[in-house]
Length: 221
Image (cartoon, rainbow, N blue to C red; front, top):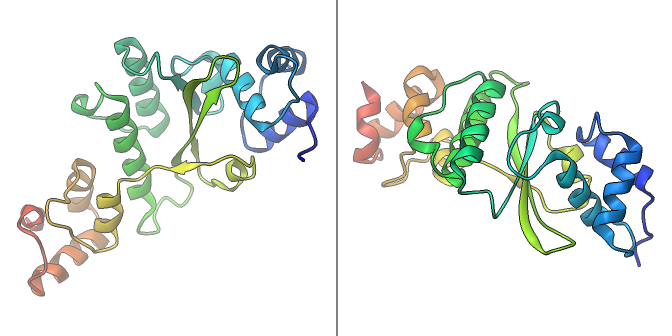
């Protein structure tokens, strides 16, 4: 059986993952007590406590310093929440994000994850962040929520001992590796490829072999 955590141990674990960096220890302990309702403190409850302090409606003053934010299922479709996430990701990534993807949280996250991935797939911008998420549920009321985090290294997040998702669309990842799928052209890859030498070479090579689907032909210029 897992040994219950103390609040200070849980907070230290989150801090090692680059989270909760400016959260007061007493405030965190109080949030843990509220979330656990007398149950032993574990990683699940600690994350719920972190979410309650960060806020569950997108980036907040408490979460933005860590380039992280939380959205629960009740807030995911709120235009105000989507707008706050959109603006924060544009600011943190220093890159415009199309309005077309900003009206749906899943599409917004998918585009941002692709953008992060494509900045690093050819070895450039090695310190650029990737987008990760931790999908859990609030322990006191079983409400699902997602914690989104930008990190150049995901290892400290995986060390938390909960499932962590790495965000990149499968078609984008395949195209970046020179595997061009029929109907597999994502908007992020369409924007990226013309300015990327590695992608242009891969596209030309696939075209020369007769293996480039029609949807990618326009990227050859």
